[in-house]
Length: 450
Ligand code: NAD
Image 1 (spheres, helix red, strand yellow):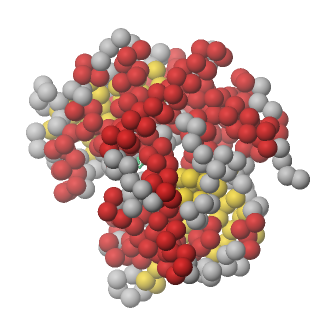
Image 2 (spheres, rainbow, N blue to C red):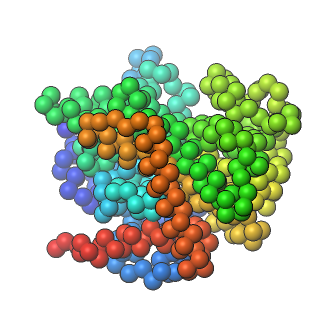
Image 3 (cartoon, protein in one colour):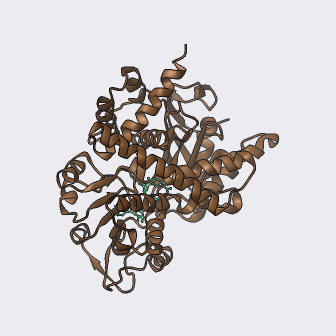
């Protein structure tokens, strides 16, 4: 398959399956502060705690494969614009690479590396047979028309070529991509296969619209997982979700679903921040998450939500509540903002929302953390269910999805709790430790070729 202007850094056999790409060596610490460096530090801390073998540490210290492409897109005015995109495949010892595709102007190779490594940990922790990957295109989709976003998506998929595939690397939605984006990916990927093989294209991505092969419950799954974990944490505190108040940063797929499910359980939403600003409830019953989701759908953000007052970032972070759910981007809970928080729990819906310094402040202040690799794993679990349904030619109902999801989440929560107690670790390190043990076990059993 041909790709245009593609470049790749890879140590896998796929180097020969796509168009010619020049090889370049990965630069692991190319920018500071590096998000991937943070992941490496997190790995190291947990590895030390459980005495992880040196071999496995070395294997996980770098991604297995990095694909970097530049590709042309025809804009509505007829001109061609070039875009850069990445797919980083961190590790696949447990199964096919798995991880979302993000559209954002700040996407970089370093960020995608970190996100891919987190996926390796997440899948191992919740014990599903997937490895870790992530992808992204450096673009602000708000500056493009819908047709331009569609053409960009199709060209990105074409540029990735055989680097993705149903049994090899299976993308999903992430920041600024959604079910519709996934449907375009399936359609484009199918068109690159011989007609006799197109039937298998459906499982090339998860998070598709239900009408186009998606799973019931995938849209809410990440938010559902966040809420389930808050519920488990509340039970440990001998309290109930209905008695909790909370704030949310990011009101996209993860934040809005978490808030809507928390509303159904009786929790009170006090304040929300997104890219358009921050708002606070003026009513004693808090903000209505369903009405706010409608408002965001219509206007593109939380700003101007009727009945709410606009607040500053400082006031948002300083809002007194039981739980804070970061569900936007990385690096939001810093030493500075962690010091402002007046909550008992940070439930990380986003990937990497807390910096190392932020983590230290939360720890010092005794604020509990349900770490990202555990807290937002509901999405990839139901993605796994979707992949199984596609490959089995079947469809599960909502109860089946919810029950199986809850079972896996409870098991993962218990593993982290146990590991934290056994090794006297914070929950983030405990989650990594549990995941690393699982990966180490597989390497020990399989050995390394040759
Ligand atoms: P989304 O694009 O649907 O929503 C992102 C939200 O973040 C929007 O409300 C946006 O306004 C807000 N935001 C962006 N920049 C911001 C800023 N600087 N300050 C405050 N808010 C800002 O994305 P999503 O799928 O909900 O993903 C959110 C986070 O959850 C990401 O970290 C993603 O990697 C992670 N995540 C997503 C899934 C999933 O299934 N979608 C699964 C696991 C983890």
